[in-house]
Length: 127
Image (tube, rainbow, N blue to C red):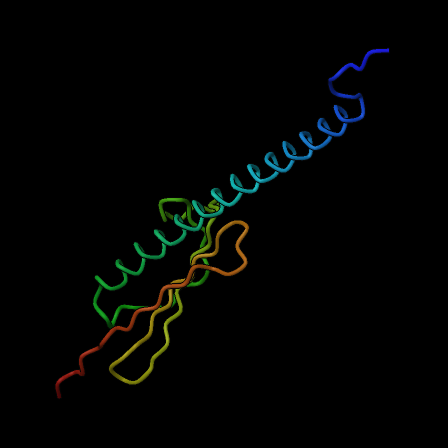
């Protein structure tokens, strides 16, 4: 009887199981990377919407700055009833010459909204 060298059926099956487990792990990791990239892209859009709106607020006269109820907007920040983002403006008077303006943008799959805060000085009215 001569001895033959090579792989046994069991060793081939074990190798195939290990290979399939590895490929499945890579596929799952790829799916999670795609989901994280999508969420990051949506969050970047929400931040851009908040920045653009806070700049529009800062460009207007301080006496005209008012709070805004939540409004749905699209990716470019324009009001749209079917928009995926919700923008809210909160204005708090810290003292007679200083207000705090918060712009919050809620986005799909968000756990917390994007929030930007600015302080605006209101010069006193000369008497």
